[in-house]
Structure formats: structure tokens, C-alpha cells
Length: 375
Image (cartoon, rainbow, N blue to C red; front, side, top):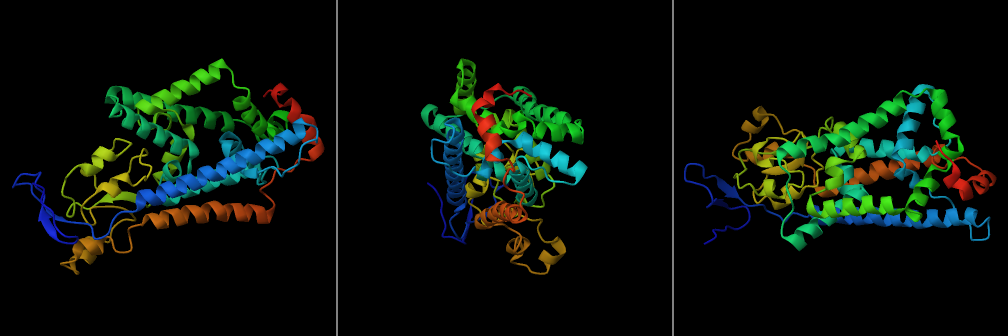
């Protein structure tokens, strides 16, 4: 028989021995973190679909030599050029000037890094369309097969290292280029139409490309977040930056009843119920662990708790006080992401560092021949 208690009341956890039993104070209000996160995910996917459609229409105008309707190039498409963003960051650091080619790649790159600095690796589980697709693929696979595959540690650990090796490779290439080399690359035909070449890869995808994407989809159905966990260098960088964030998933040992529910739902396979705070670079603050936690104040995404000396003076409401004005509700996470994202875009627009400064005549010459240009 399951023992239950009204919200805010204390009950014993029947799954634990008498020696280990802890009092359970049930949460006073239902958790809405997943509904809010999924709403943000779908809104960002919709934004990217709109950008993609507008970009295709823009490309068609130049491919048809002006016979189709003209639409403005959506600068947001540069968000899909993270290497260009990294190159622009390097160029700006060396020269003190923001490049005129794909400047929005750097702005979006900076926005996502800032978001991860403020609210940990939130970009991956709240904004990234690839992360969203990956999440729903493994959930689909689990529904179809009844479970997801969990790789043994001796295979999981070296595979997770791959994304950091890829990140190190790209960082090494970009940061060993001189400012002159970076500038020449950015204004070269390849650099100018790098976005068109990316689109053409998917429009004219070959057998090998289809095979690789198909394998990744199958693996994503079987293994939770396969691409994100093992291969994404962008996510690796976000994880490294997120270690500097003051915001982390934190566990209150006094309130925790050691039920282990948080462990079971963590898509990154972190031992949440054994840690006081989650410092791991793999934590994406998806808040699924918080969503399933039955105990009030046991798990929260928060700033560091108040010092024990402050808490002791407020007994018996010690647990509540530890997290007063420290925990971040999912609405706050969504608001921080929106302010950072739209704030930096607005600043870039106001200062003239959002749109690529290339004339229509140059695009008319380069876009139809984009596939002919190499590095």
C-alpha cells in the first residue's frame, strides 16, 4: 500500500529501512519546468524554420538571376555557422574590429556562451534545435523499445571524449591563423557563401551523407542524446563555459529522502542523488531531475545556498530559508535566455553589426556558383 500525505505534510518513505528512513515533506506546488522548457524549445524550432524558409527564398532569388521575389537575407541563419562565429571572435580579439562578413554568427555565438555562463549549459536543452531533435528521438526510441541503451563506462567515457577532441581541433585551427589569414578567408568567395554551401549540402546530399545521417538517427533512437553526448563540439564548448556559472542543480541533503528518482530520469546519467551540487559539464539543466523530485526543497536549480550560520538563526524553517531567493524557477531561466538572446541581437542591430555587408551584385555572381568554391 502506498502511503501518501497532503502537500506540505510529513510522511515516511516506505522504500527505506527504519535506520535510513527520512521524513518526506511533499512539494507544495506542481512542477511546470518541462512544460515551460518544451514551449521554449518549440518556439526556437519554429523561429529556425522561419529563418530557413526565408533563407531558401533569398537563395532562389539569386539562383534565378532575380526572376523570383526578393526577400531580405535572414542574418539569423549565421547561427548555423559556429565555426564562422569562432573565427569572427578570434578576428575581433586580434584586430579590435567586428568583421563585416557573417557578424551575426559571432553575436549569436556570444549570446549562447553568455547564456551558458549565466544559467549553465541551458543552450543545449532549451534552445538548440539539434538538441531538441535528439531529445525527442531517444524518447521515441524508448517508447518503441521500452528502454534506452546505457553504454558501459569503459565505452561511454572515451566516446564522450570525442567531442572535446573535435572542439580542440577547431580551436587549434582557428587560433593558429593570423588576423590576415582570417580576414582573407572571411572575404573570400567561400567565406561569403558559406551559408549557401551549408544549405546546398542538404539540398544536394549524396549517398554518403544520407547514410551518415541515417546512422546518427538510429543511434539517437537507441542511446540518449547520442550526438550531443559524444560528438557535438559546440556542446563541448558550452559545457566548459558552464563550469563558470554560479547556477547549478543543487541537492539539499536534509530535505532529500534518497528515493533515487532523479538518477533514473537524468539523460546525462549523472548520480544526482549522491551529489550536493552538479558540477559536471554534461549537465544541461533540463530540470528533469527536479521535475520528478517529490520532496520540497530537495532539488533546485539555484545560486549557492545561504550560509549555515544564517540558516541556523531561522530554525525551524531552515530548509526553506536556505533556498529563499536562491532557487531559479523555470520561468526565470526562460526569461534570462530571452533577454540574452534578443538583447544582444537588438544591440547588434542598433550598432550595425548584424547584417552581412555584401552587395546584391556580388551575391548574384557568387550564389549560383557556391558549390564551385573551395577553402
